[in-house]
Image (tube, rainbow, N blue to C red):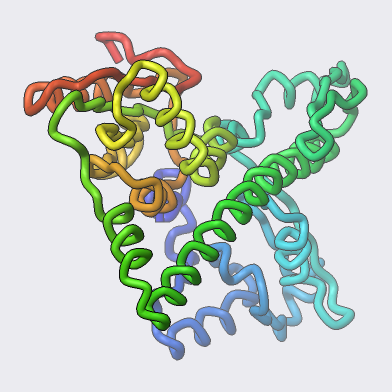
Length: 335
């Protein structure tokens, strides 16, 4: 809708239809049929890149190269990109495909505008790439095509997420075993085990010597790697915090944390700042973190909004510490 309502689309707006999941089945069917008509522009959400048959019956389109598909984002999975390409040139018909990307959308793949410009101008450049699966530094590679860089960076993102996901699976198995043991205790009537489980799972923060931590994190595009790790390693964080507290002779049961993400003013107002409740259990915090997705971002970010929130929380009850995780400075007064 952003492009549809923009000045860039003003001259062709009457020829544009947009296809989203919200439409009725009849509406979607009609738009899909009209999508391959000469002079028609159809904007689709990514879900229509799979399994949607855009069949071209218009001879004007067919004799001029067929339906053209433009992908406006880099798929994290190559299989999705292949499916999107397959929306045209179907069953022997002609068709074409291209990809047009916004440079700031590539931040999550750790691709900078300068990288693209160097390749485009024929300079090429070298990257030393870290292999998350083998935990080692890969050989330096020089890129001469933009797509080669895009594809390699996509693979790197997948590997990073795979390692984090495997750690999460390990934690989930441990939680699953604990839950099964609890069910066994219920069936056998083991009152002591039942009581211990319920006390552990429902025990709140102790009233004395509280340790209250606010974790502020940038949730714009370039932070996708770290945010994904946060989602999958919440349990590990709690374990490490507990050890640190014990070393300082503070009960681990006194630990509370609030997870807060900030973006920038080009995000919708409800997404500039998002915060969890104060949590003492990793599973509760993970539920909140799993709902957070990276989006938006300019050169600087709205760190000042995050710190404002921390001050507001501190006025309600003293905060022990604030942890700030980001890769860009705050906005200036002018910004």
